[in-house]
Structures are given as structure tokens and as C-alpha cells.
Image 1 (spheres, rainbow, N blue to C red):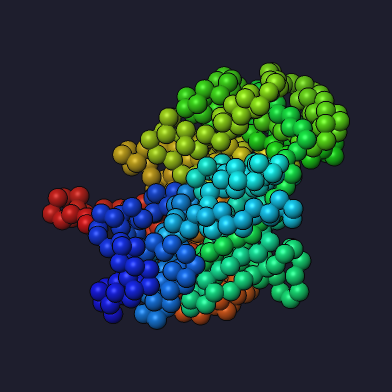
Image 2 (image 1 turned 90 degrees about the horizontal axis):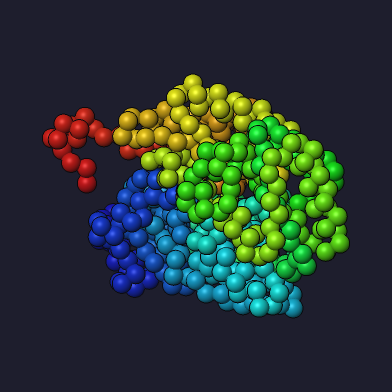
Length: 483
């Protein structure tokens, strides 16, 4: 089947102007936020509505061509990596806030609406959308559904799956169906729950109805410094042991603080070993009493500096430092891998010590930023590709993810498995588990055209050397060029 045949079918489906086939335009879609993995697709289509998405999927299905849905491209696991000779279906033009229902506290959205724009649309009604990934200014609700994204406030409020009521999706053969309903409880199998977090392997979400929450009466935020990560970790354990459920508990080590301060000057202490951001929200009386308990716990564990946000602007400044941490790594390292894993809170100090030892053995620095309240780590492996460090950094990143499983945790908390960690899935799941997952996937997509090569290990994927592009010796010698 030639490219021209499929291109004609897609142009008929979405319009000639909504099909990209020139090499320069295609390169814009060759990777997501995990830039070490790159594949140039054969074609990119940009539908403007659900009907266009369905028509594009049907064209791919009829021609037997694999396709990958793509939102803002902010994913960090290679989940939106294109397939060679395949099609990327971009959802960036589906950006409408269809409805805000303040009575039932719901919002209906197209998949290209950014996470933060949901809250902006709901704010005039005293409502907001609770899941808040650090990339919330640019990541989209369609991608949040695909990855079951969380964010800093997932400790108290849960992940995307806890806030999605229903979805209109396009199945891998082009059929349009609705999963879920007006409440989280529906008769029959929970297909809504199956789809959320399936990383684009079961279909494409084209409309989402989410629940909204009332803005809390009170929000209190503090920033606490400690001479060691261990002491900061003990504070987290003691807060939870006291029966307090903060809206968020975030931790950053010194490397992460150094990067964030250089980028946004948020007022963090450059010399401290670790910093905790603790936020409580709720009724004023309860919040005040629990906040005082948290302050005392911090002081009991030798807090060296405790800054309490006195107003909304100070609170925003503290969070600006935390949420800038990933992007700010470029201030202290030319290249880095962002990892994502989960360990029990009681093993935070142990895993951080092990990560430090592993990095030292490889001669690489590892910065740590994480949702300490639920043990969701985000180690950032820093390296310099020009000095030949990328292979060691990639291997270290993989070993850190698998260490989380070894210590009783999981490979991912919110970034997904994607391409990056598919080959590590057998470290966490047995053969029967993986076979069952594969059967579920086959029930939705028997032809394996929808985002193939992601999430589950395959002989082809795991038999190849994954990761950053490695030039052929003839290319290095100047005999051939990479197209």
C-alpha cells in the first residue's frame, strides 16, 4: 500500500489542509517529552472534531496502517512516539470547553483542553479541577486520561481516574462509543476504568466529562528546610502517622533546588540538603489546628528554616519553584532523563540512599523531586551526551525504576510505561498478568494498530537497543547522512 493511497483517504477524512506530509513538518512530531526516542511518522493528521478523528482511524484501519494519538506531546515515557510508516493523529485542534455545569459540578471538554484551562473555566463558579500535573499549563485532558495523571495534590484528591465520569472515545476500528456515565458507579464491567491509564493503546478519547470540586475555604502552605533527606522523609511519615492528610507533600533535594532557584528565584535555600513543601486545605478551624501540628513535627525533626506563605502570592511563588524543577534541570545539566517510580513511604530514605550510591558508581548526578506523601519519586539522571554518557544514564534510569519494584513499589506513578519501561514490565508482573493485559488489549484492538509497541513488552521492542539515536559508523565517518 503506497503512501499516496493512504494520504488520499486521510485527506478525504479530515480535509487536505489538515494532512501533513512534508519532511520538515513531520519532524515536529517525532517524539514527545522523552526526546531520546525519535521516530518520524509517515503522515500527521489534524482533525477538528470527533467525526474527523473517527474518519481518520477508519482510514488507517481499512489500510492496515498503525496510528498514534498525540496531545500536547508533554509525556515523559515515549507514549506518543510515532510508528515508522504510521500515522500520528493530533488532537490539538479539539480545544473546546463544551460545557461547565456548576449545579452538578461537572465539565465536558474536548481532549485538547489544557489541564489548567479546566480550572480557569470553572473558577467563576467557585470550582476547580483537582488533578494538577506539573505540566498543567500545557498538558491536555486527553493525555491526562491516557496516562492517568496525578500531580502534587493527588495525595488527598486522587488521580485522573477519580475525577472522570464519562468519555466519548473512538475505538481502533473507527467506531464511536461512550464509556462511563453521570456517576463513577455504573452497571457492568468498568470499561471507563479500563480505558483510563491505557496509554492510548485501546482507542482515542475525543470528549471527557470530569467532576469539579469546590474551592477550599482555606489553604495553608509552608516551605521547610532540613540538613538531610532522611530528616525530611521522617517528617512525611510522622505527618501521615498523626492522621493528617495534607493536600500535598512535596520534597526536593539540593540539586533540584539549585536548578529551580536559578530558573525562577522562588526563595528556596540554596545550601539546604532538602526542602519540603506541605500544603493543607479545608475548613478554616481544622486547617489551622493541623497546620500547627505539622509545624511542630517539622521543628521536632530539626527543621533549619520554616517559611509559612503569608498570602496567595507567596504560596504561588513556592509552588512555582516546585513546578519549575523538571524544566529547570537544563540550568545545571545539558541533558537528563526524567524517571518515575513509586516506593512505600517507609522506604523513602532507603531508596534515595540507594539511588545516590548507584549514581556515584556510574559517575553521574541524580536530582530528586517527588510527591513524598505517596512515595512517587521523580529522579532526574543528569548527563552530557557529547561526552558519551547517554548510554550509562539510560541504563541507570532503567535500574532506578526497577529498584522501586524491588523495594515493594511500582515502575510508574503517573508518567506511564510507554516505550521507556515496556521491557521492564516483567520485573513487576508475571507471565499470566501480562497475558491477561494483552488479551484485554486484543479485545479492543485485535489488529494491534492503535499505538503499537507501547506499555507491554514485545520481542521486537525488547530485542532492540532502545533509547537515544546511535549513529551508524558510516555516518560518523561522513560517508552517509541521516535523513
